[in-house]
Length: 291
Image (cartoon, rainbow, N blue to C red; front, top):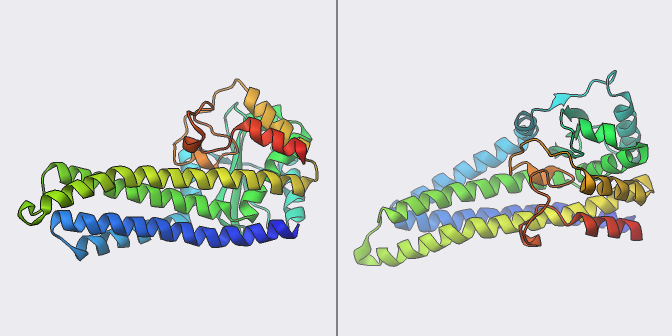
């Protein structure tokens, strides 16, 4: 138990380090962009201000943005009493406020949590999850999402998504500017443009790989934390097995939202683990069944 609490503290610290890394990458991009355009520090300061504004906006409005993206509706207690009872019981066990509940009309088995902290969090489940999972399996899925909330994963993943988006926008601008041939070629401008183009191409890829690595690590921790919360790892293992064998396709989901789900809703067959938002379901099931 103490090891998990230590891991939660480490997660919070790593969150700040990851955000610092993304901000440094944004600064590096904007600095080179300033050299390419001849605007110098002005463009760097402007881009950093934009990144900060995007981060703050996402911090306070991420839940509303995500709900609108997936077309989720509030889950009324009278219509989803069993879901409410399950979440209430696990919230008490986890020692956090009960999150708000939403549902998505989707026959695929899936669920996610989002928000900025345990006091401002929500859990959203597909209707297929409620139809196809038994009580213990549903408890396993909810406990997994509850762990994301308690471990502050929801904050980290949303901030990382914003930072990756900001890096992609700046890189796109640099590439367009580079091909237009901006910069003073007489004073090494040509070399600066080449360096800028290389950085603009590689930075978004590297940032995305870091984001995906963060996502995969947090899925393993949420599995372990969720199993500890229910004291029954087989419940989550069985739910993941049903997800793996489920034939119902997920509705169209944005790539920005996909890392939030308990299982990748876009494509279950990903080429290479480095490019996956989640660890392989087979590995997660095997680990849970060894607990």
